[in-house]
Length: 295
Image (cartoon, rainbow, N blue to C red; front, side):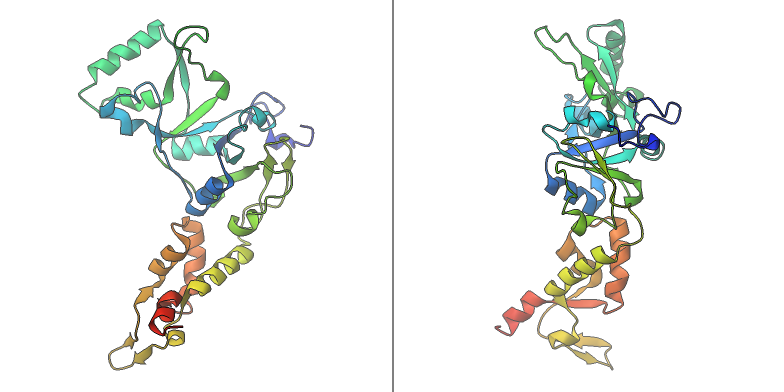
């Protein structure tokens, strides 16, 4: 991948090492999944992983978010089923979100026997220290045996529980298209560097930053199609009572935003809410007005 800048490959200690990576990548199955994650600022830990994940008592502890440290120019081996994704700085996730590399332990082995003893001793105590380790440990069993299990090639890292990130944490995106992903116009805050999973070529389209005008304007337009100010909905302001009177329900700004956009990342909510509150603190649904006035 000859268009890589030095800072995009290797690690701080070995910047010219093409077999190492300073990035962690979370991959998704679809464009819709990626849009949802970016909009909410959350990667949900929906599945339990690790050598204790099958135990009912400790299963919730093992729900984790999976990432890979496979170098970006080798992502093709990972993106066949999951061609979309988000790229994070490895050290940032390790420092701020507790990301840890998965420990692959041979089974059978003395080390696996020691873990088994510690797990049995802690079966009645979900708060035992051993359960802080087991979400990050996986068995490695002979690929030619009766119960093969060997995922070392994924070079996996995990974050225990949901990964709630900010836009500033996002370094790049992974897309399955060679051209600039069209959805960036709708969900990105400005532009972004992205890598195509098809040919592993990095393409630069700017970077996440404060130039959000285009995105915010589109979202405000969408909001205006669903809600209008009380005055525009026929409400009358009673100065003496200091309240509106009208035929339909009024909704405050936060609830109205939730109806239109769902859960937003803190960055997006903080950017959009003041723009709406500058117009009104309360809103009425266009659909309610149409029904009330039989439009």
